[in-house]
Amino acid sequence: KRYIYMNGEYVTEEEAKVSVFDHGFLYGDGIFEGIRVYSGNVFRLKEHIDRLYDSAKSILLDIPMSKEEMIESVVNTVRKNNLKDAYIRLVISRGKGNLSLDPFTCHHPQVIIIVDKIKLFNEEMHEKGLKIITVPTRRNTPDALNPKIKSLNYLNNILVKIEAHLAGVSEALMLNGEGYVAEGSGDNIFIIKNGKLYTPPSYLGALEGITRQAIMDIARRLGFEVLEQPFTRHDVFVADEVFLTGTAAEVIAVSEVDGRMIGNGSRGPITKALLNEFQKLVKEDGIQVYP
Ligand SMILES: Cc1ncc(COP(=O)(O)O)c(CNc2cccc(C(=O)O)c2)c1O
Image (cartoon, rainbow, N blue to C red):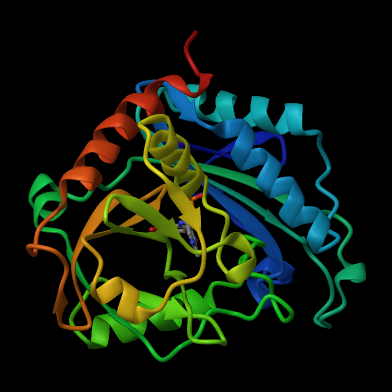
């Protein structure tokens, strides 16, 4: 049996329901985090919670518990489900209100913690790398709905998934309003050229990924230069290596973009080395569920 945390209680999947008047359901008025547990370690949980509370502040959503209480609730929910490896979906909605858009008619934000088994990319996909495309749908502009806010408004990302699917690929890149590469539908992007790593700067219009930061930390620790600067599709096409990062994706190589083969058409050596280091880090850096 799986238990879901809802507003301080554990309920079963069948009992886990929200009101049809919940503004998270009606308007995507809410925020969320995707977090992973590796061998009982909740990877960089504090960093995820810090980002969650930043997203909350940015949309004036008042989470009815402290960061410490939220961390404890996440850990307890993993323990309640007795999982050592898992994917956690932490959702906070504005809560039940009337049918207007007005968030000030919602007085009880919903705090929901779902713990699930995780699907992985298999070893073959890691070695071969993903074939991806660039799609016409641009990333939300920061002065409209800032991509730094991990909100429940994922239609921008879902439209990208639809375009990728229609093109027969599993993932796609979004550009920003100026035509610079922003990120994938649910992951950040890195390119490697002449031994240097490049990733779009966070102001460009992408989520400040926890995995992105971890890879930058690892790469710098290994002595690589990492530059956060804008780049274009051309820079991606001529890169030696390309990979995507995300809690679900981890570190996944890209072997083809818009029909251009990347490097020798399979995962590059630096990408593989970074993934190896990442797989060690995720077991250590975070909060232990079963100390
Ligand atoms: C738009 C976007 N960009 C980057 C990332 C990677 O960030 P982290 O390194 O912090 O996870 C995300 C988060 N990744 C995310 C969110 C929701 C679902 C899925 C999925 O692949 O099922 C993935 C994301 O949603």
